Structure formats: C-alpha cells, structure tokens
Length: 531
Image (cartoon, rainbow, N blue to C red; front, side):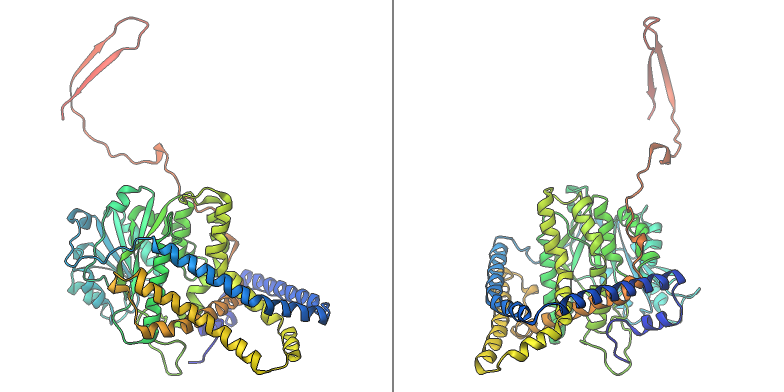
C-alpha cells in the first residue's frame, strides 16, 4: 500500500485515466487557474509588507497568546457550568420490551457489500428485537448477479428478506428498498452491515406522536468493550459528539448513517432527492439531514440507545495489504476521516449555511441575528481552522524571518513548554469533570483514566485530519465532484387532490328522502347508508 495524502489511490487513477467527463476536466482546469491566481495575488500583497510591519504583526500575535488562553478557559468554564443543569438520560433498564404494535409497524434495512464475515453477527442482534420478515438486507455490487459470498445463505438461515441490487452504492440500495417497504411499514430503522443493536435496545413511538414534524431519531454509536486506546479515544469522541447533538433544542443537522429510526415516507422522499445518487460519491446521511430540514422537518438525537459499530484500529495505512472487513473500506482513521467524513462536512458548508439562514423552519429560533451566530459557531469553525492553518503556511517565509530574529534562550523554551502544558491540562480538567460529574450516573459512558490522558493527542490528530481534508476538498472534491446542480430546490412535491389515488368503494343506499320546501331554496337530500 502506497501512502497518500489528499486523495485515495483509486481517485488518483480516476483523474489520470479519463474516468470523468470533458466538462468536469474543463471545470477542474478553471478551478485550478482561479486558485493559482488567488494565491499569487495574496503572496504578491505580502511581499509588499515592510519587514518592520511584519515584525510588529508577529509580535502582536505572541503578545495576544496569553489572552487567547484566558478566553479559551472562560469558554470551557461556561460550557461546563451550562451542562450541569442539563439532565443526562439514565441507562436503559435491562429486559425492556417495546410496544408490540410499534414493532410490527417498523422494518429494518441493512445495505451491505461483501459482508459474509460480519452480516450474521448483525442479524443475530436484530432478530432479538424485530421479526425476521420485517428485516431486509440490501446486497449491492456492480455485477448483474450476486458474488460468490454467503450473504444470501446467511439471510435464509435467519429467515430475513434478501434483495440483490446490481449497483455498488449504499444510497441506491437504501432507495430501492425504501420504495418497496415505505407503504407497508410506517417506520424504518437503517443500520450499517457492521452495526449491532444492543441487548437492551428500547425506543418509544411517542417521540413521533408528540411532534408531527419529527422525521427521524439518531442512535448513539460505540464500539464493543476493548483494550485498544485508539478505539477508546474514538468512543470518547462519539460520546461528546452525541451529547452535543442531544442538547440541541430544535433539530440536529443529520442522523449518522450507522443507525437511526425514521418515518418511512419521509426517508424515501429524502433519498430520492439526495444528490449522492448522481453528483457526490458519499455523504448521503448528511444530505438526508439537509433535505429534510429544508422541508421543515426535525431530527433528534437519542442518548440512551447506543448501537455497536465498527471502528478502525489503525491511525494510518499499514504497509501490508489491508483487508476491507467493514466500515465501507474505512480500514484506518486517516482514510475514514480525512478522505471521507471531514471532506463531506467541509464541502456541504454552503448548503448548511443556506439551511440555517433561510429555510430551516424546524429551528425554533426565528431571530435572524441568533441564527447567524449559531451558524458561525456550529459550521464555519470547521472551515476557519484549516483556513488559518493554510494562511500560516502561506506566511511561513515571514514566520521564519521573525523566528530568526528571536534569540533562543531558556525563558523562550519554558514559555513554549508551559503554554502547551496549560492547554493539555485544561483539556484534562474538562474530561475529568465530565467523567466525575456530568456522566457520573452513566456507567456505559464512562472512560478510563488512560484514555483521558491520551485523548488530547487524539484531538490534535483529528485537527490535522481536518486540515488535510480541507486540502482534499480544495484540490480534488470541489473540482471533480461539486457541481452547480447541488444548489437547487430540494422541496418535496406536494400532491394536489387530483394526484391522490382513491380506491373505489361500494355504497349501499337504502333510502333517499327528497324534500323541496320552496322554489327559491336548494333541495334537502337525506341519504341513509347501510354500514
């Protein structure tokens, strides 16, 4: 395996083997010329800056650094105090049983691909909670017939429905199955092929009954009990991510693709409109969220049901051949995040900005000023951090010039060391507070002391991956995948009375009384219908 940074090996091959249309290559060329022009203009402007001003500029940054640390500390304290007053849901009781009628009106769809090694474990966890006849496995590949794996045999073993779809696409598999089941089942659970339902899985229908604008509920994600520090760090990251979503008072941005409960008719509509079908290569879960929110629907986060999903056990590529066990070929954290997840998150920022600013009817906050603040806080931070880093890279010659003027001494070394140590210990205090105070009654959410000590370094690694993902978006994702077709109306078609199909029924009329009171009045007709 040859390590790569901004693109995968397959993406690199696609660029240079003519896999894209002529229009796409022309669009990419125009994009690169525009980027080169912008960089040259910025660099030319910097060359004009006198060195004395340059000195003052970097000196002021160093001078402001302690104040920035103070602001960070104040923000974290405010954030922690705010969370004290939010009630954390208790763990689900064991042997909980869901409402039988609700279970009968719910189906489970599992898109899979070359999954014979993992699908049995997934099905075994699901049949404990749902009837086999309501479980559908959507096997998808780029061949007209199923491949020589045992997925179909395993499905037959558990008496679940097996469907083969001759196109290797998760969203296509979901869409085809939703067209089949949406009229039969009111609710649909979607799960990845490597995702297990927990033993004490329990969810209520009343979330949807109390809010007719609720389109779906996302499950939390965690891995099985493990001694791996890397997987424990990812578990901790997931816990904070889903806790942040759970606290949302209006709607969460999207439901993670690993697992969620949906209103079947709304999920089908969102999947049909989803641009991942023919424009984007992945990110169907986040686009489902965008489309549903544009149509005025809400999404919620469950903080009691945590499905058990695959988590890569490597930070980066190994030099031996990697096997695609699960996770849609995400064999390491680098490939999963930098070349997939974070790319999609950065690329859809303009659409997210549109949702929050204009068409998000499900947002309870109608104050346009607060919406702007919310959008900056929740979305633009994902793009401003990489921009700052790349701006620093652009300024490296000036930074080196400034550093050459500094006399390296013990005080400077201590200043740098203590600055890093302060940030590290602030993060540790933050994590310890959550372990001992916020999540004290949730044994399933607590993390080990070893994980707490290592987690700040994991955060630093994810920041690096966001920066790399930003480079991948600029150099590959935008020129070769983002199209003007993305920025269109995703409104669901409203059916008129003429569009509604009404089945004919037989009506037996036993008696009709016609009474005309006068020539000027409408006749009164009384019809008695035999039930």
